Image (cartoon, rainbow, N blue to C red; front, side, top):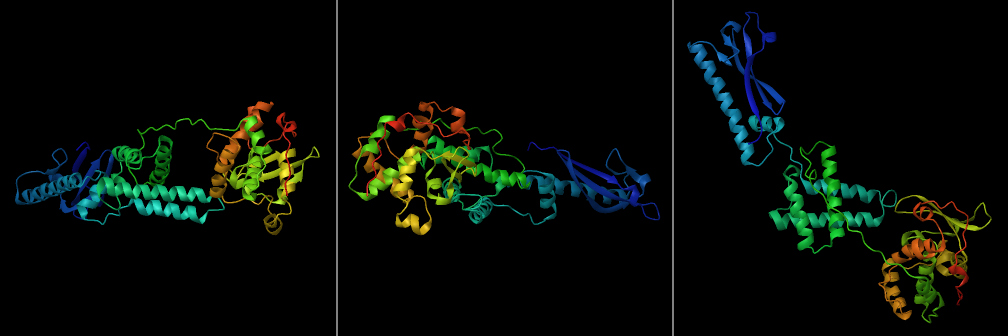
Length: 392
């Protein structure tokens, strides 16, 4: 046991009775923190030895009181041993609870994690996206599975979570769950948030993440080249769903908006800017940051094409977007039809905007990275090459 437990017996002169007899108290100190309690014994101050922590002499009174003090000392040491055997941190509070048989409120991991997720659920659509809730649900599920895999338990006292727990959890995610590095790091990051809640509430004594380090690996994100964008635009589809998905994907390529932000657009998001041109005024759902995006010719033609679509007319939507899953599924067919040898997903459109459509056309990186684009509508070199054909 690496803790420093000190036991001191002393008389409280301030509580002396009318005869001058003082009560004897016990003071237990653990790593500078202490608690005190009465021994239920009293003695004349003249008979007390401060140096020896006991009553002077060998009288019957002295032997009786000193034996009682030895008994109390052994009780404190026995309580310390019990904590050690239970693998419970030996702190002033824990030792006091063990010594006096006080009911100790154990805080378990799973209810704390679930309470966090319940609060996220209540704030979906206000502060959090549905995807955020789903990630924390999955993270909790992985945590529960790990507890069964490693400890064969359904839950665990948060004060039993240490560095070894975190290291084993990371190993579990990488090996048993077969998660990639960045996925593993993100699940650990979610778990870290729960631990931070415990630490902020003073429910935990030590931070198990104090010596833990994990690093995300930089992922090279794919984007489309000018030629591939041209191929998409020039391709004539006889299947309406493929034509629709292609159009909305191209719209994102020229606006830089993510799927959920395109889905949330209404006709009210289109207004005239100070330059007299049409702009998209919206807020990104992920960051809640304002975005002002010039409506360039190609995305404007796409908006015009679908303005009378039933979904747009009935729901005041700017575009009749499908579910993200269906969009990504159809994009695979579109990529094959256009001879694009890339794993095409809707998110690639946003990266295409940030690279091919902007950086390669002279837009400064600062303008691409900041959430609010305050520059005047710029002319893209590639827009003069594209012949966007409206189909009925």
